[in-house]
Length: 113
Image (cartoon, rainbow, N blue to C red; front, side, top):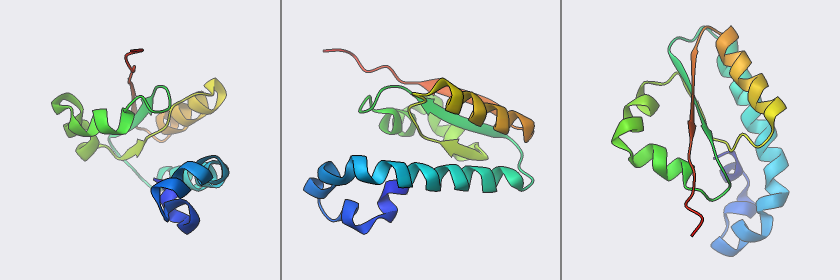
């Protein structure tokens, strides 16, 4: 969602395709900063993380599944990512745990066909 802050990216479907990679690093930085700021305040409850490949349908899956919809609405924070870096994923989960939150990671596996 942090990519949505960049007007050139959101201008059209084609610009989303053209600028996805260019916007990713800045959007990732924004998301990381927001994550740190949220955890620096007193928070209670769950930290919900997504994991899985790009285009696997993580966001859609967690929003539409009856099993996860309530987790989203009740979570103190939702970090919708792919967790493709072990170091980054571990750091974020550790930060959430240190803030006193319960960390929940939902892995979405896209069918290969």
